[in-house]
Image 1 (cartoon, protein in one colour):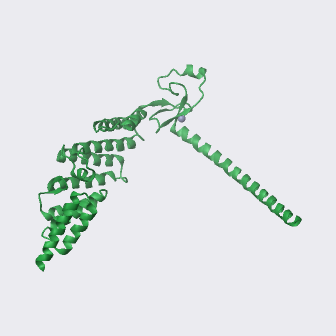
Image 2 (cartoon, rainbow, N blue to C red; image 1 turned 30 degrees about the vertical axis):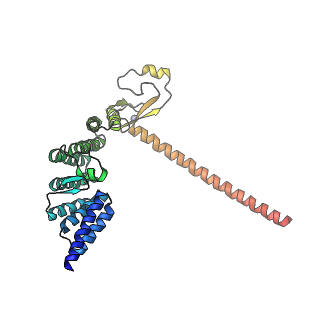
Image 3 (tube, rainbow, N blue to C red; image 1 turned 60 degrees about the vertical axis):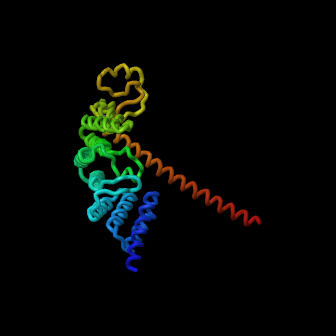
Length: 305
Ligand SMILES: [Zn+2]
């Protein structure tokens, strides 16, 4: 009887492997759990496969990588198959460790942008040195994507790092912000992304102007100054001879520094709010009058019947 139970566990394990080959991961996990409860000589592997399936279902939780690393160590196999993919246990462990570091670095939103950028760059350099041009197995088995490699992931993370630092530093130093965006753009191009957004920000951060209203110089369009549609008559156009411009080249907009712009916007908001409140009060009064008229009409109709 004991022998039969043992054999059943092994059979269930094999059925689990079969379901992985058919990409039926939920079913496979069920078979591995059944195999474990019946008892199997491959208990370590069954637990490892369960951990791997759980991880593939949710790759955003660091604990799932930690559990898989533990199970890989416990089962002691140097390699195994997952469907058609051959997996080296040590390489997968490295990938899991880096993935956890990547999640931690990406979610560093409380600290400064430079710290977060640096943390992303640190993980990026590990992807390049520890995995390099080898494919990332988790992407291969979860998305069928054999294009993602350590090198590619490293470039993605470097782009993210410079985007993060550029977005942060531009508040104090637009020139530096523009340089970081250029680097992010170069990394995006290397991985085949258009990098359009980074390129746009790089140009905007590098742009300088003089405020039409207060005359202060400002760099970094969209951050430290805005371009606002305006009617610029020929007399003003002819006076625009400075290298640092107060209006765009087609004379369709003037440049306004952020302090002037936000002061006007805030004042305009206040004025519209006052008008809105006044209009609403008048509408309510009118509604009350109409309701009263309707009520008196009803009364007249009832009386005339
Ligand atoms: Zn100004």
